Image (cartoon, rainbow, N blue to C red; front, side, top):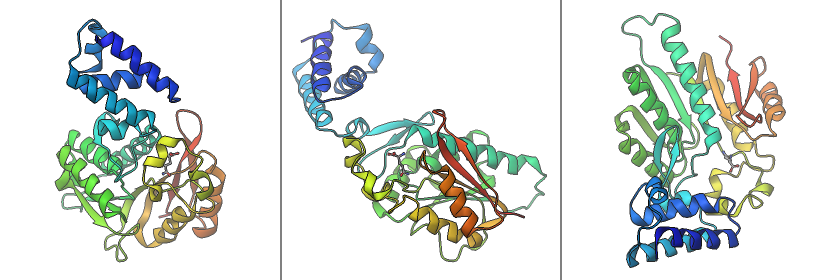
Length: 298
Ligand code: GLN
Protein backbone atom coordinates (compact mmCIF):
# COMPACT_ATOMS: atom_id res chain seq x y z
CA UNK A 1 0.00 0.00 0.00
CA UNK A 2 1.08 3.59 -0.60
CA UNK A 3 1.43 6.36 1.96
CA UNK A 4 -1.85 7.89 0.75
CA UNK A 5 -3.75 4.60 0.97
CA UNK A 6 -2.44 3.81 4.44
CA UNK A 7 -3.22 7.30 5.64
CA UNK A 8 -6.80 7.11 4.39
CA UNK A 9 -7.18 3.77 6.15
CA UNK A 10 -5.63 5.07 9.37
CA UNK A 11 -7.74 8.21 9.41
CA UNK A 12 -10.85 6.06 9.02
CA UNK A 13 -9.77 3.81 11.89
CA UNK A 14 -9.16 6.74 14.24
CA UNK A 15 -12.39 8.51 13.26
CA UNK A 16 -14.39 5.39 14.10
CA UNK A 17 -12.74 5.34 17.51
CA UNK A 18 -13.87 8.92 18.14
CA UNK A 19 -10.61 10.82 17.64
CA UNK A 20 -11.16 14.51 16.95
CA UNK A 21 -7.82 14.96 15.23
CA UNK A 22 -7.80 11.74 13.21
CA UNK A 23 -5.91 13.13 10.22
CA UNK A 24 -3.10 14.75 12.18
CA UNK A 25 -2.74 11.75 14.47
CA UNK A 26 -2.67 9.26 11.60
CA UNK A 27 -0.03 11.35 9.86
CA UNK A 28 2.14 11.54 12.97
CA UNK A 29 1.86 7.79 13.56
CA UNK A 30 2.66 6.87 9.96
CA UNK A 31 5.61 9.26 10.00
CA UNK A 32 6.78 7.51 13.17
CA UNK A 33 6.40 4.05 11.58
CA UNK A 34 8.50 5.20 8.62
CA UNK A 35 10.99 7.14 10.72
CA UNK A 36 10.46 10.34 8.74
CA UNK A 37 9.08 13.83 9.34
CA UNK A 38 5.36 14.30 8.74
CA UNK A 39 6.12 16.70 5.86
CA UNK A 40 7.75 13.85 3.93
CA UNK A 41 4.44 11.94 3.87
CA UNK A 42 2.57 14.93 2.56
CA UNK A 43 5.16 15.51 -0.15
CA UNK A 44 5.25 11.84 -1.27
CA UNK A 45 1.80 10.26 -1.01
CA UNK A 46 2.66 7.75 -3.75
CA UNK A 47 5.59 6.05 -1.97
CA UNK A 48 4.98 2.36 -1.24
CA UNK A 49 5.21 1.41 2.43
CA UNK A 50 6.98 -1.79 3.47
CA UNK A 51 5.37 -4.57 5.46
CA UNK A 52 7.23 -3.81 8.72
CA UNK A 53 6.22 -0.16 8.71
CA UNK A 54 2.62 -1.13 7.88
CA UNK A 55 2.55 -3.50 10.83
CA UNK A 56 3.96 -1.03 13.29
CA UNK A 57 1.57 1.67 12.01
CA UNK A 58 -1.36 -0.71 12.49
CA UNK A 59 -0.21 -1.56 16.04
CA UNK A 60 0.13 2.14 16.99
CA UNK A 61 -3.30 2.90 15.50
CA UNK A 62 -4.84 0.25 17.73
CA UNK A 63 -3.19 1.73 20.81
CA UNK A 64 -4.51 5.18 19.91
CA UNK A 65 -7.96 3.79 19.05
CA UNK A 66 -8.01 2.23 22.53
CA UNK A 67 -7.58 5.72 23.97
CA UNK A 68 -3.86 5.84 24.79
CA UNK A 69 -2.52 9.38 24.43
CA UNK A 70 -0.53 10.09 21.27
CA UNK A 71 2.33 11.43 23.42
CA UNK A 72 2.73 8.06 25.17
CA UNK A 73 2.73 6.18 21.85
CA UNK A 74 5.25 8.52 20.25
CA UNK A 75 7.20 8.79 23.51
CA UNK A 76 7.50 12.55 23.49
CA UNK A 77 5.57 15.81 23.44
CA UNK A 78 6.66 19.28 22.40
CA UNK A 79 6.54 21.83 25.20
CA UNK A 80 7.97 25.32 25.03
CA UNK A 81 9.72 24.39 21.79
CA UNK A 82 11.49 21.42 23.37
CA UNK A 83 10.78 17.70 23.01
CA UNK A 84 10.03 16.07 26.37
CA UNK A 85 10.09 12.32 26.89
CA UNK A 86 6.62 11.21 27.99
CA UNK A 87 5.44 7.94 29.48
CA UNK A 88 3.01 6.86 32.20
CA UNK A 89 5.49 7.84 34.92
CA UNK A 90 4.43 11.46 34.52
CA UNK A 91 1.69 13.78 33.35
CA UNK A 92 2.04 14.84 29.70
CA UNK A 93 3.08 18.52 29.53
CA UNK A 94 0.09 20.69 28.57
CA UNK A 95 0.26 23.79 26.35
CA UNK A 96 -1.46 25.93 29.01
CA UNK A 97 1.50 25.31 31.34
CA UNK A 98 3.74 27.25 28.94
CA UNK A 99 2.13 30.33 30.47
CA UNK A 100 3.67 29.40 33.81
CA UNK A 101 7.15 28.98 32.27
CA UNK A 102 6.84 32.32 30.50
CA UNK A 103 5.77 34.10 33.69
CA UNK A 104 8.56 32.45 35.68
CA UNK A 105 11.17 33.41 33.10
CA UNK A 106 9.98 37.03 33.08
CA UNK A 107 10.09 37.11 36.87
CA UNK A 108 13.55 35.57 37.10
CA UNK A 109 14.92 37.98 34.50
CA UNK A 110 13.34 40.93 36.28
CA UNK A 111 14.99 39.90 39.53
CA UNK A 112 18.38 39.28 37.97
CA UNK A 113 18.56 42.39 35.82
CA UNK A 114 16.19 44.83 37.57
CA UNK A 115 18.35 45.68 40.54
CA UNK A 116 22.13 45.37 40.68
CA UNK A 117 23.25 42.09 42.24
CA UNK A 118 26.68 42.74 43.69
CA UNK A 119 29.48 40.32 42.85
CA UNK A 120 29.37 37.43 45.29
CA UNK A 121 25.56 37.54 45.65
CA UNK A 122 24.22 33.99 46.01
CA UNK A 123 22.36 32.56 43.04
CA UNK A 124 18.62 33.19 42.80
CA UNK A 125 16.76 30.24 44.31
CA UNK A 126 13.85 28.79 42.32
CA UNK A 127 11.68 25.78 43.19
CA UNK A 128 9.49 23.77 40.85
CA UNK A 129 7.14 21.91 43.18
CA UNK A 130 5.60 18.71 41.80
CA UNK A 131 7.83 18.73 38.74
CA UNK A 132 6.36 15.57 37.13
CA UNK A 133 8.02 15.14 33.73
CA UNK A 134 10.28 18.07 34.59
CA UNK A 135 8.84 20.21 31.80
CA UNK A 136 8.81 23.44 33.81
CA UNK A 137 12.19 23.12 35.54
CA UNK A 138 13.97 21.87 32.41
CA UNK A 139 12.45 24.55 30.15
CA UNK A 140 13.54 27.22 32.63
CA UNK A 141 17.05 25.81 32.89
CA UNK A 142 17.35 25.70 29.09
CA UNK A 143 16.10 29.29 28.73
CA UNK A 144 18.52 30.54 31.38
CA UNK A 145 21.41 28.70 29.76
CA UNK A 146 20.57 30.25 26.39
CA UNK A 147 20.70 33.66 28.02
CA UNK A 148 24.06 32.74 29.48
CA UNK A 149 22.89 33.17 33.07
CA UNK A 150 22.37 29.54 34.09
CA UNK A 151 24.88 29.73 36.96
CA UNK A 152 23.08 32.72 38.49
CA UNK A 153 20.05 30.60 39.26
CA UNK A 154 19.68 27.50 41.43
CA UNK A 155 16.72 25.30 40.59
CA UNK A 156 15.25 22.70 42.92
CA UNK A 157 12.66 20.35 41.44
CA UNK A 158 10.59 18.17 43.76
CA UNK A 159 8.08 15.38 43.35
CA UNK A 160 6.67 12.81 45.74
CA UNK A 161 6.64 10.25 42.93
CA UNK A 162 10.10 8.68 42.56
CA UNK A 163 9.25 7.43 39.06
CA UNK A 164 8.14 10.87 37.90
CA UNK A 165 11.41 12.21 39.23
CA UNK A 166 13.32 9.63 37.17
CA UNK A 167 11.49 10.84 34.07
CA UNK A 168 12.26 14.46 34.98
CA UNK A 169 15.93 13.61 35.43
CA UNK A 170 15.98 11.88 32.04
CA UNK A 171 14.51 15.00 30.46
CA UNK A 172 17.11 17.16 32.17
CA UNK A 173 19.87 14.90 30.88
CA UNK A 174 18.32 14.94 27.39
CA UNK A 175 18.43 18.72 27.35
CA UNK A 176 21.85 19.01 28.90
CA UNK A 177 20.75 20.73 32.12
CA UNK A 178 20.96 17.88 34.66
CA UNK A 179 23.76 19.72 36.47
CA UNK A 180 21.59 22.84 36.80
CA UNK A 181 18.67 21.24 38.64
CA UNK A 182 18.60 19.54 42.01
CA UNK A 183 15.95 16.81 42.01
CA UNK A 184 14.48 15.76 45.33
CA UNK A 185 11.92 13.04 46.09
CA UNK A 186 9.66 14.56 48.71
CA UNK A 187 6.22 15.97 49.37
CA UNK A 188 6.10 19.61 48.16
CA UNK A 189 9.20 21.20 49.77
CA UNK A 190 12.04 20.21 52.08
CA UNK A 191 11.07 20.53 55.77
CA UNK A 192 14.09 22.69 56.39
CA UNK A 193 14.41 24.99 53.42
CA UNK A 194 17.67 26.70 54.33
CA UNK A 195 17.89 29.78 52.19
CA UNK A 196 14.29 30.60 51.15
CA UNK A 197 13.23 30.61 47.50
CA UNK A 198 12.68 33.83 45.61
CA UNK A 199 10.45 32.21 43.02
CA UNK A 200 8.31 29.11 43.55
CA UNK A 201 6.44 27.62 40.61
CA UNK A 202 3.99 24.73 40.80
CA UNK A 203 1.64 22.88 38.53
CA UNK A 204 0.15 20.69 41.25
CA UNK A 205 -2.85 18.41 40.84
CA UNK A 206 -5.96 20.61 40.84
CA UNK A 207 -8.77 18.56 39.32
CA UNK A 208 -11.56 17.86 41.86
CA UNK A 209 -11.58 14.11 42.68
CA UNK A 210 -15.12 13.69 41.36
CA UNK A 211 -14.14 15.13 38.00
CA UNK A 212 -11.03 13.06 37.30
CA UNK A 213 -13.03 10.15 35.90
CA UNK A 214 -15.00 12.47 33.66
CA UNK A 215 -11.90 13.71 31.81
CA UNK A 216 -11.25 12.44 28.25
CA UNK A 217 -10.31 8.75 28.07
CA UNK A 218 -6.70 9.58 27.11
CA UNK A 219 -6.25 11.19 30.55
CA UNK A 220 -7.06 7.86 32.24
CA UNK A 221 -3.66 6.60 30.99
CA UNK A 222 -1.89 9.33 32.96
CA UNK A 223 -0.99 9.08 36.66
CA UNK A 224 -4.12 9.92 38.63
CA UNK A 225 -2.10 11.32 41.51
CA UNK A 226 -0.80 14.03 39.18
CA UNK A 227 -4.36 15.26 38.55
CA UNK A 228 -6.46 14.55 41.64
CA UNK A 229 -6.56 17.64 43.83
CA UNK A 230 -9.00 16.33 46.45
CA UNK A 231 -12.68 17.19 46.96
CA UNK A 232 -12.50 20.78 45.68
CA UNK A 233 -9.33 20.36 43.65
CA UNK A 234 -7.40 22.73 45.90
CA UNK A 235 -6.35 20.40 48.74
CA UNK A 236 -2.73 20.03 47.63
CA UNK A 237 -2.37 23.66 46.61
CA UNK A 238 -3.72 24.61 50.08
CA UNK A 239 -0.98 22.51 51.69
CA UNK A 240 1.59 24.33 49.59
CA UNK A 241 0.19 27.71 50.65
CA UNK A 242 0.71 26.67 54.27
CA UNK A 243 4.39 26.04 53.52
CA UNK A 244 5.01 29.35 51.79
CA UNK A 245 5.67 31.50 54.88
CA UNK A 246 8.68 29.24 55.61
CA UNK A 247 9.78 28.60 52.05
CA UNK A 248 9.28 31.86 50.17
CA UNK A 249 11.63 34.79 50.70
CA UNK A 250 10.25 38.20 51.63
CA UNK A 251 9.29 39.86 48.35
CA UNK A 252 9.25 36.43 46.70
CA UNK A 253 6.68 35.25 44.19
CA UNK A 254 4.74 31.99 43.93
CA UNK A 255 3.26 31.12 40.53
CA UNK A 256 0.61 28.41 40.68
CA UNK A 257 -1.26 26.83 37.81
CA UNK A 258 -4.96 26.50 38.58
CA UNK A 259 -8.13 25.19 36.93
CA UNK A 260 -10.18 27.50 34.71
CA UNK A 261 -12.89 27.82 37.39
CA UNK A 262 -10.59 28.27 40.38
CA UNK A 263 -9.62 31.92 39.94
CA UNK A 264 -11.80 33.21 42.77
CA UNK A 265 -11.33 30.19 45.00
CA UNK A 266 -7.53 30.42 44.96
CA UNK A 267 -7.50 34.06 46.04
CA UNK A 268 -10.11 33.35 48.74
CA UNK A 269 -7.91 30.51 50.00
CA UNK A 270 -4.81 32.71 49.90
CA UNK A 271 -6.69 35.48 51.70
CA UNK A 272 -7.55 33.08 54.52
CA UNK A 273 -4.16 31.37 54.83
CA UNK A 274 -1.78 34.14 53.83
CA UNK A 275 -3.46 37.34 54.97
CA UNK A 276 -1.96 40.45 53.43
CA UNK A 277 -0.34 38.61 50.51
CA UNK A 278 -1.54 40.07 47.19
CA UNK A 279 -3.15 37.45 44.92
CA UNK A 280 -3.66 38.03 41.21
CA UNK A 281 -4.94 35.69 38.54
CA UNK A 282 -3.76 35.71 34.91
CA UNK A 283 -5.72 34.12 32.06
CA UNK A 284 -4.44 31.68 29.43
CA UNK A 285 -4.66 32.11 25.65
CA UNK A 286 -8.21 30.76 25.74
CA UNK A 287 -9.11 33.56 28.19
CA UNK A 288 -9.53 31.21 31.16
CA UNK A 289 -8.07 31.88 34.59
CA UNK A 290 -4.94 29.68 34.67
CA UNK A 291 -2.22 31.22 36.76
CA UNK A 292 -2.31 32.54 40.30
CA UNK A 293 0.45 34.95 41.39
CA UNK A 294 0.98 35.19 45.13
CA UNK A 295 3.45 37.67 46.45
CA UNK A 296 5.02 37.66 49.85
CA UNK A 297 5.15 41.22 51.12
CA UNK A 298 8.70 42.40 51.73
N1 GLN B 1 -4.85 20.80 32.93
C1 GLN B 1 -4.81 19.41 33.34
C2 GLN B 1 -6.02 18.67 32.80
O1 GLN B 1 -7.09 19.19 32.76
C3 GLN B 1 -4.74 19.29 34.85
C4 GLN B 1 -3.37 19.45 35.31
C5 GLN B 1 -3.26 19.47 36.79
O2 GLN B 1 -4.08 18.96 37.56
N2 GLN B 1 -2.24 20.08 37.22
O3 GLN B 1 -5.89 17.53 32.38
